[in-house]
Length: 163
Image (cartoon, rainbow, N blue to C red; front, side, top):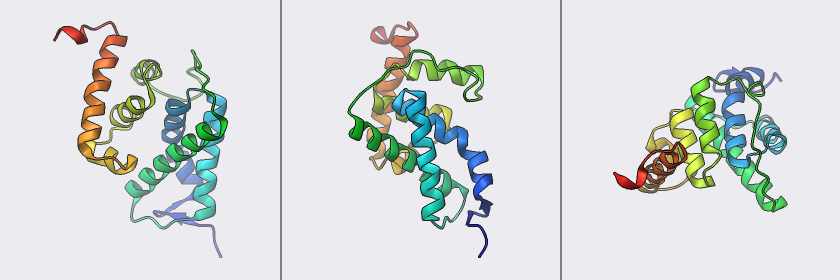
């Protein structure tokens, strides 16, 4: 029996292709690099051990994001501590300057806004896709995006309250 394949990709290919996405989700959720690394590893271990069958890469990526979010939620529930990290070094994950600029601001938001804005702007998901990944209604996602944008504007020193 050969190594498992995931949407016609080897396990190693999946890890290379989606490592940045999964790590980004974990860092945004936990705001702590060491904890994010643990959840990152657990997400890919689940992929390997469960070896689910995917229709295509879109479903594979969505599954990985959902598992990463669940791993982070489980971690937070089990540890009941919140550690905020002010600086995450840019060499830890390769991102463009714009993505790091957004990441810096997103870390200052509460979890629901942070997740939705990250998936929308950094991972480029549409509202309907985010709703499916997070298991929430599309209107809830739209509301979180709208309010999250207002909060981001305030973080950047915008005039969100006077529009």
